[in-house]
Structure formats: C-alpha cells, structure tokens
Amino acid sequence: MAAGHRTRGISRRGFLRGMGVGAAASGVALGSGAGPALGVPASGEATTAATSPDRFGRMFPGLAQFAPENDRVTNALLDIGHFGGMLDAKDPIGRPPAELITDPAASVNNRDNPTHTAGTTFVGQFLDHDMTFDTSSRLGHATVPEQSPNARTPRFDLDSVYGRGPTLDPLLYDPADPAKLRVESGGLFEDLPRDTSGRAIIAEPRNDENLMIAGLHAAFLLFHNQVVDMVRASGTPADAVFATARRTVTWHYQWIILHEFLPQIIGADRVQAILTGGRTFYTAPMGAAFMPVEFQGAAYRFGHSMVRPSYRANLAGQSGNPFFGFVFDPNEEGKTDPGDLRGGARAPRRFIGWQTFFDFGDGQVKTNKRIDTHISTPLFRLPLGAIPTHDQPISLPQRNLLRHLTWQLPSGQAIATAVGVPALGASAFPELRGYGVGLESSTPLWYYVLKEAEMVEDGLRLGPMGSRVVGEVMIGLLQLDPGSFLVVDPSWHPVLPSRTAGDFRMADLLTVAQVHPGGRGQ
Image (cartoon, rainbow, N blue to C red; front, side, top):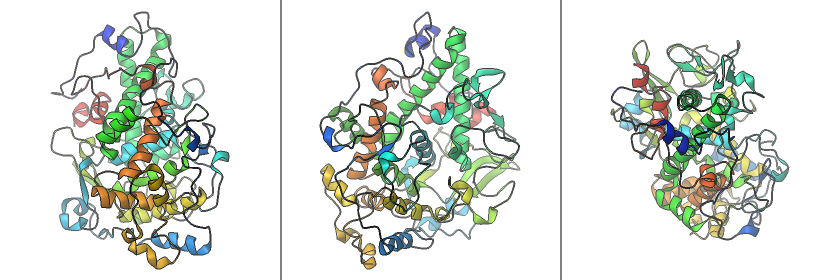
C-alpha cells in the first residue's frame, strides 16, 4: 500500500465472512447461490422482445426504425459524422497535446465536466467490453438482433479478464501460479502480456485499443493477483483460492459500477429510483439477461463524447517529465513507440499514472469532457488498429450513426415518449433540418441522447430518457446475474482496504492493485 494511505484492516474471519465463505472455506464458484434481488421489475414484461442471453435483442420492439434505409438517409448520417462536420469539436490539434489540457482557450467548443474525472471514460469503456461484443453484423446493413451473437456474457462478471478460467485459457494465467493472472512489464511499469508480434494476450482484444484501457486491464490483472495473496493469507484452502479471489474481485467491481460509476453518469437519485421502483422497460421474458441493441448500438455510446482529445498519461515517463499525447494521431501510424496514446505498443514511457485519471487527493486529477454533441477531433480519424473489424469508415461518429441502420433503431423521440418523459421537439435540432429526411423530428438515438444531456443537464450527466435506458440495463444486468452480490447477498458491503469503511471506489481498487503511484514508489 502507498505510504500514508488510510485503509480499514481485515481480519481473517472478517474477510471470509464478508465474501460468504465459512471457516471451512468452501470452494463455492462464482455464479452459485441465489437470493432476493433488489428492484424487481414493476411492469412492462411484455414490452421486451424475448431473446437468448447469447444474442442481441430489443428493449422497445414495438417502435419503428427512425428513418428508412436509403441513400439519402445514409449520406445524411455520413455527413453528420464526418471529420470537420457538425459533431466535430474542432479541437486545435495543430497545437501540442499538453496545451489542449492546460490552455482554457483550447477547449471553448469542448467543455470540461467538473463532476467527472478523466478516468470515468475508460471505466465506461472497460464495462462496455465486459458485457457486449458484436462480431458479426455489417455496419450500415440491416441485421436481425435476435440472430446476432454477443461474444461477451451480458453480465458484469469480468469474463473480459478471466476468459474461461485457468483450465480452458491457461495462456491468460501465470504458469508458476495458475491462481494468478499473467501480467508483464512494459518497461518502467506494468503492461499486458504480449506475444512476439506485440499482440496482447488477453481475453478481450479491444482492451488494447488505447493506452488507458490497456493500463486499466493491466490494473485488474494486478488487482486479482493481490486479492489472491489476501485470500491465501486468510487461510482459504488451495482448491478454493481462485474461485474466492474471483468472486471477491467481481463483487468489488460490481459495487463500483452501482455506487460510483452509474451515479456519476445518470445521478444517484435516478439509480435509487430504479432500485426501489423497479425496472419497467428492460425486463427478461426468458428469465435471463440479454443485450438490447438500443443500449449497445446507441445509448451507451454516450461515453465517446466524454473523451478528451489529449491526456497526460503519466507524470514522469518522458525522461522524468510528463508524457502527454493525443488519444489518436494519424501522424504516429506505424511507429514502434508512437507519440499518441494508441494501444498495441510497448515502451518504457507507455504506462498510466493514475493520479491524472482518478482523485487520490494529491491535486493531480484532470476532468472529463461533457456529454454533449461536441466530439473530440481525434475520434474522427481512428487508426484501423483501434477498429475491431479494421475497416472504414475511420470516423467514430460515422460508425455510431451507421449502427442505427444496422440494428434498425427507433428514434430518440419515440423512446422518450415510450418511457414517459418529454421528448425534444424539432426545434431542438435545427442543424438536422437541412438534410430533408426528417431527422430533426425523428432523430438517431445516439445523437438524441447526446443532445438531451446537453440541453437538459448541461452535459454533466445523461438526460431523463438516456438515464432510464442506461440505468435500467446496467442495473438489470446486475439483478439478473445469479452470481452478483445483489442476488447472492444484497446486504453485502466491500471488505477490501478502502478510504471509507464499507465502501470501495476506483482509487481504492488501484491502490490495492499497487498501481497507484505511491504503491510503486514513483
């Protein structure tokens, strides 16, 4: 632990009791057990299309597609999302990346969000990669969700980290200690394990898209390994160490989702309203969670608006000085040690100093961007390596908008009306009127979610419709998971060292993992 870090001590008995393991340390595997869930669905059971947990489905199956699939609509979507277009924040990317952080004049079109730290974006990306991965649909071509496989489990179970476990995926695990995950050094500090070509050896390949998500994945590897040591020290029998450690890690991760991340995104009041009032629109006719395309293809992609054009990756990686970089820079393509923050590269400076991204009380933390219709310029020119299918277009907003045709998504106005909140009228979208295809009154869901957050919440959190869709799905994934703490033990509280007894935040996780700067001796 970092010197001076105040943590709550854990006794052997307290640790075992806190994770539901008795004195005999039974080898209960993750996912076992059953118990009462919080927030049982209140109504709307017939409004969700039945779908298998390993397929996509619809949250609002009765709503029509936002617009017909034709060349005029497709061309309008491409124009809305093109580099230099209406969504582009037009960040001054000709200036050094550090100046886009330190000079307020550089952010006039791309406002900071004082209620989020810079790491919130990448926690959201990590969660996305843990619950959904579409590997088969064609961008911009109509696809039936119920026939499309989801390559991730629709649960917050960290299958993106653990894969199928040490027996079926031994390459992910330490050969000298199979209860621990494999992690390597990138020079100064931790890196993902990699093969001779530099490809990351991880269960979720998208977690090497940029340096921040790669660093977060590596932090989870180390977090698990630290918990293994704690579990062993508690006297747990050898054959139960891995299962107990995995459940400990997963439940603390789920706590962070419910008590830190989701309140930041939709507000603690809305989280509580769903927990106490129940889910109305995300239900499970087949008795198990599934991934709705309204969430996967549009609403949850609000996080792209929170990405900064550049970041301070660390405080001392550049010959003892801070390493600043654009999140992506086309000029860095093909370099073994690129100056931007793309993933897939290993070098001594390419590690994350987490004090920039989360608040450790040292005054170094930076903020996110607001949830609005101003997208950081580097996201309009992604490197092909950051796109799972390695194909065009390279503009992330264009890709988001074309997914509305892929999944035949309803408009934002239609969903707002369905969930019973005031819909934004055509006057809120004058910039869309000129396309002549009705997008101002039947707006693509992703665009609508961003505009609703901007107009109703000043970009500080999602608006009422976006919050309802995102909140119900994320809480529903926890409530429908038979292994989650909400189901197994709804009264459970974190047991690992933390700044606040009975609570656990990302800063605590990183400190336990010993990737907090003080834990490394930086």
